[in-house]
Image 1 (cartoon, rainbow, N blue to C red):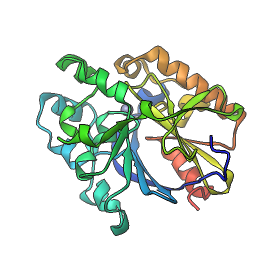
Image 2 (cartoon, rainbow, N blue to C red; image 1 turned 90 degrees about the vertical axis):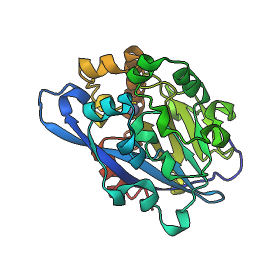
Image 3 (cartoon, helix red, strand yellow; image 1 turned 30 degrees about the vertical axis):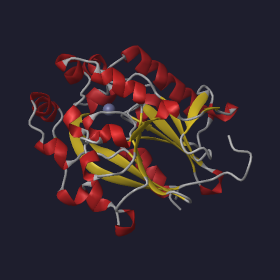
Length: 284
Ligand SMILES: [Zn+2]
């Protein structure tokens, strides 16, 4: 990491649609009550580059997609997305064209808004995308990969996280040991979080004042997945790409959270840490 003055980012959290599903699926809890799972988009303000987005949430393209796979996805995981919630509507006039959008992984609730961000450079897992594209129709459906959500010029705009310089993480991030320095200044570090989906990365953000924030995408659906090791119920685990890797990643997050109770770890669909973000004034 850079030996000069650390570069920090300012962060704000946006909700771009939500789905409702039984809590039991997400954490194996004994209640069969429904719970709302907001779709998180993180707006990162970098001092040199301007606005960088972490994911895009749901989008009109997902609502309108007509492929059989898209219809199945919407039936299994129905979602709500008010027009004013769409990512392009939520960005202010100054943000109309972000400097980049970083994709944590390729599930529809994370890439659904890509088509609403024309021309914006994309940073994503090249390895994960190559593996998804190598799958047949059944494999794509099983991995909830809907290629029609990717803009036609996706490849021309995309660059691979794996091509960014690797950095060793300090002991404070153990048991995570390595990351990719996305901007070359230590402000945004992508950390591989295997298990939930092919090519999933989380993001360590250096905030002003020396605090860190760890966005873990869908490595956990709920905070209880890693805080209490309350695992998703078996249907959800079976649907996932690699349940063994998912549990290993959760155990690593559990160890990190136990050692650093002050570190805010934010999954993409859990409202609780997002409220803690606001209460702790992490966006200041
Ligand atoms: Zn996902």
